[in-house]
Length: 329
Image (cartoon, rainbow, N blue to C red; front, top):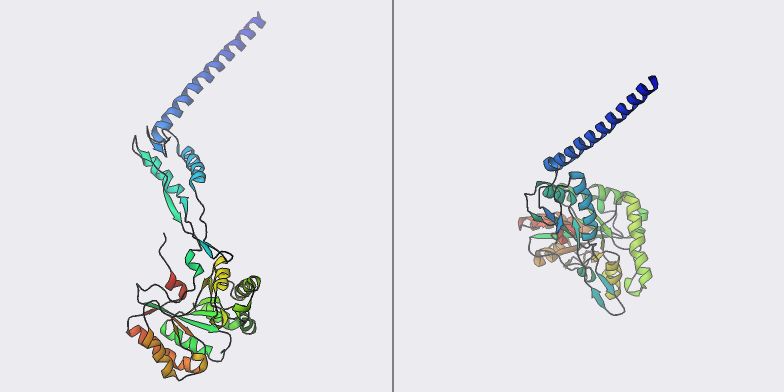
């Protein structure tokens, strides 16, 4: 009799356990349906034609992330082929704003048909990289002072003091051999907020160089400048002696550099009088001008009057990168 009672007790416990499981499943199922109703996407909402109805936030994130992988397009830089002279234009890419898309889906009204929120990813090298730059855009009254430095360290402190006094930021193009001798000057110039750019590892003649030599001229100097300043220099290349041809511009462009020339050459390396330098600048000034200088005695003597005259004429003095900056596509 005791055995029968014991077996009956086990049966009752088993039945209770089954009922509890069934009841729990029912409650869980009801909670799941309620949770989707309260917290999920509303009915008949679609994203790029895919139903998102009743998906919970974590499920929406998973779906949007997977869709973003399919919709993202990487940008393609422009390229130049010396053999054919052909420039392949750049292609801008497309990215997906995952967070904004998720928020939009979760807030959507019943029946809304949505698309992924996308944005343009600009190519870093455009077809204009394969033409030398003689001046910037003319839509604003902005100009740039560029200082090519392969010598003239004696005049740099005074030049920098004038720039600092007047709040002017210039673009300095450094020769690598000079940088090795005067790294502290380069550090100071970078610390004072001027733009650091590339004048080649040494002051050779680019028109006589092979493609590999040109590449080393630019790349090795960029590495040197980064070692000295701790920062990547601007992707701007002023060829030694102002020499350029298709090969020079193509090599620089394929490395992601703009080849920078000038609008106004002060020809200050000939050491004319300060008045001559001032006239050369003031008489030819125009929006977008790139003004080439070197650290010479007459340049330093002319510098303050040039800065004041240009500002009195309504010009802002900006770096070359700022001058060439474009709005995102």
